Length: 535
Ligand SMILES: Nc1ncnc2c1ncn2[C@@H]1O[C@H](COP(=O)(O)OP(=O)(O)OP(=O)(O)O)[C@@H](O)[C@H]1O
Image (cartoon, rainbow, N blue to C red):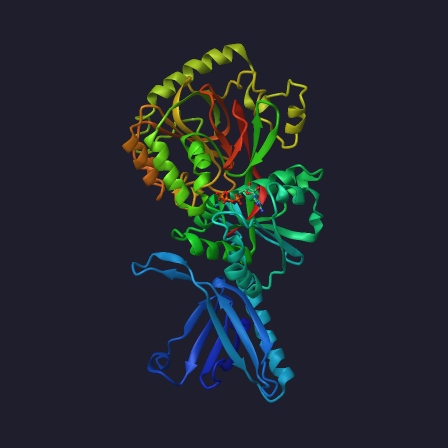
């Protein structure tokens, strides 16, 4: 450490002004050592407060006019440890000192402000520019942040979350923001479609994933969509699923966090204001409409549970458990065709089993054989690969698809390009493609996913799985260990694009948890096209 950059002073405790502390600010921490007093402190123990955990620091005058001292408050959110030593969410710790350099009240306030500025500045420097290959930049907070709250999301508690811990932390971090409560479905979509985005440094959603889905689609509907979609987005969990919030927390490599712990973690990341790229998926429905997704595409069991459990919304996240048990009781299969373009590193191996190292091709050989058979047939018919797919349709749909570069999809009525893998027509229990690690707070479906890995993590379960085996898979998803269950009916692939053609009718398909038109559907991931406040 460079000693020249150290700040050192003697302050007293804010409550009584009697306890004296030697306070040192280095580049990495605020160190507090008690002068005299109890034995613990006398033995040279100093309290080391990591600046990486600090969201803000403020100076103020005393409310008592006769008191010439100033006060310095620093706000930390260190990770709590459980009795086993495992991380267990963040907790708020405020440290408040009395600053008294002399009888001049103005000089005392200036000294406290000098310290507050120095703490804030160094806390903002304690960030990593690069982690796991993901590059971070910082939100420019010179402008206000738009905070969108859906008062109806989850159990209807989003407003109280805002007026409680969220407002408190944003105030401590000195983040100026404007609260907008949504009044109806598609309100957020219309709002961001027409907003003057130059006024906002970020759009933060305190709600479930459904509201972010609206915001992303609203941004993509703008004339200046290319720039608009680069607006940093933030997510605070206020819904019942909170998949993106749980994923954003997971990417910090902290231990699991639920409920208010998850909210504090995401709000802390928001205050730190680091932005990383976020994959966006363009989804094309057979009748033409085009959607943009950031989270998931589901058909079969998962989609049914999502929609059927809407009526249990009042029980919050428990609705998924209730829905899963009910759907398990009436387990059904769904006939359809699935094709996908494997991710580049995946295309060498035929499929990724739940334990690739120990069983390189043990589990999924039947589908692999079928793939090569159908693919050969297909390649006889067309000499077109994904990389050189051309739009040979004049429909508006294809004009719209020009929005994002590198189209990998051919029109739904045409065969898929020759470098795609085609599964045989079969019965599925579920097909799920996700961009992120979590599908809900306690459902870690793709543990290795990253916000901008450029992959759709495709999981599908084929017919024949027993109810207990399917239940075991879902229970394993709580910790993300389902891929090591060696379940022969579970197949996991990393893909860049996919096409799903349901044969069973009627049925439910969801995109980011929202029900969409039932029928053939295609999706393609666009690496790092949007931006998310992550950490
Ligand atoms: N004031 C409102 N009244 C009714 N619906 C609203 C309102 N504001 C937004 N919506 C709609 O509510 C739907 C669900 O919202 P959201 O996803 O935020 O909560 P959720 O469904 O509880 O959470 P999750 O998606 O995590 O399960 C969205 O489609 C959104 O359009």
